[in-house]
Length: 417
Image: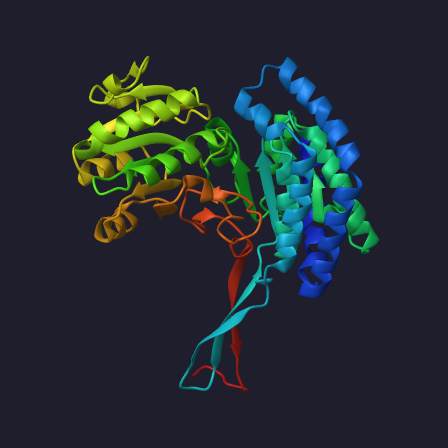
């Protein structure tokens, strides 16, 4: 039964992908506007269903971070509609081409951007992903299969109903955007076998989900394991700037992958900066896990060993370490970072350039909050995820990352000798 359902969903999505792949940018934008309008029109129904998901989540003891991701408000629903309208304003990459060269025999060699085909998104308590992923995949000419966790399934169905209304008004098949009707893991497992119909799998969720999908799938997987993001405060840092970036990165929203989980401080400025950080973090009720060189600056801090670093707290908690020098910070990030986002605060341009060049991370930042590591903030529109693997995308994935390139060869009757 699970195999039949998964195959039917995948095959219908593959058939529907042809319908969207041939649409012009203007046609796609018109449909996207209808999607944004439909989400606004069905706001009350979406919020009502979300209340049910929230109640169920609370009864099941979901973490604060998961509950925050699950929760929809009027502002967040409007944010989904606005994000779709921002995608309308982005240039459609499909059909873009560029000349590689003209061969001596007169052949003209170009490359052209084309849709991937069918994308399968697997995610947990994030109902907004339904709208974001649906709109991004549609604008890039793809069909998408959305498999959300049981925590968010009713909210996701309600959002999908609004998107389907827009598709049907435009004469397009609903299977362009499919929400898997059941959260059963057997169906997800069977979907991951449908390599004849699905072209790419993008999981968003906890590390356990990512490992399961990567280990099970017969389809290429874009991996996004976890967001262990660090802030390194260099000896040449503006300390007021560093404090503001620390507080924003750690406390503005804790249950997201671009929140700070580690603070590294150069020993030369530890006596000045750590008391500032201790006072400010205490006012925000942040729990501190600190190395033996840092723990004394914080009241009630938990002293941890080196091996205990690298945790993704997704809460008002942070790990603090005093490092001997710049190289010590790089070594720590190399060992404990997750390849997501790393930040340096320094007024030394050469140090900043070296950090950006040498840190192996999808996003590196100098003198800016880690919270900007987001597709919307980086100008991509709503992102479909953040890849911490390097094939075929790295970092926040917008429209272009949902396409690939094909060779286009134009001749005038040439034949090969």
